[in-house]
Image (cartoon, rainbow, N blue to C red):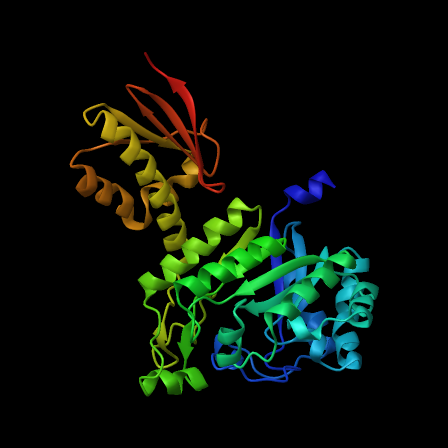
Amino acid sequence: MMEKERLRTSIIPIFIPHIGCPYRCVFCNQWRITGHEGVPDASEVSNLIDTYTRGVEKRHWEAAFYGGSFTAIPGSLQESLLEPAYEALQEGRIDAIRCSTRPDCITGPILERLQRYGMTTVELGVQSMDDVVLERARRGHTAAQVKDATALLRQYGFTVGHQLMPGLPGEDWQSLIRTTDAICRLKPDIARIYPVVVIAGTELADSWQNGEYQALTIHEGVQRAAYMKQQFLSKGIQVIRTGLQATENLDDPAQVLAGAYTPAMGEMVDTRRYQLQLFRVLDQILSACPGQTCVISYNRRDTSRVRGIRNVTVHRSRLRYGREFLWKEDDAVPLYHIQVKTDGGTWLIDTDRGRCSIIEIND
């Protein structure tokens, strides 16, 4: 078991855009988001798994049914798609099966079917826990149904994922905070955060073009996603993705009309999280003794997060404090931590938990 946990996890994405979904959300155009059209069949699923895994070094492979509402499609189609994945699972060619679906398409019999085919992780398209926002997005489900689905998935022993979409019509910061708090109380095992992107061919695109909807800027998307991610991590919720995966369609300005899309979203979000925490500690330390020396150390794997994308945190620290700091890679510093050492002592920031502890105080 320990050997498998150390293996690199790789996803085999099997896209089923729009299939089974009883609603058309205002933001949704899965054909363009995923870059895939049409419905796969069992042979395509089998070939896809074989293509990904053949001749590749051993990894933790997961077959993932993405893009639509998997549990809303007819049971016979679910089974035909799951069969080749289950066969690969039994043969040891893959290690897990997962899917994404709607909160209102979760029942005991549905989950029993998924279990028979070896599925262990179900991600729910939650988007918001504000019923007003959900209604304006034409989601067709309520926050209460998210709670019920999460509880049922836990009852059946599934790993639970929540997918959130900050920036939907009707959401403001108070709504975002309420959604974040609600998700923290439900405490899914994993979460994905996708700031809203305005895709051509959607109702949201029409609203944006008519001036009825104001899209998030990239900066605003980073702010909201960073807030959510920090809160989730502090509660032990693993955030496995921030921002849409880059595709040829999403990199086409004729397809993405507005909103918080950038291939660097994840890096920008972590830059903001680390920067806010570092500056908060530096403010406290340097307000008491502004002239003292200061060394900022971090694990080399954290370099881009601490220094910031394109060294933005280094530049902003120079402007903010009117001085230079020594930035130092040090693998003795735990990953996801920042160490600040001054003449007066040493502080250690746990960036995931959002906490700072004093390691040493100098006389």
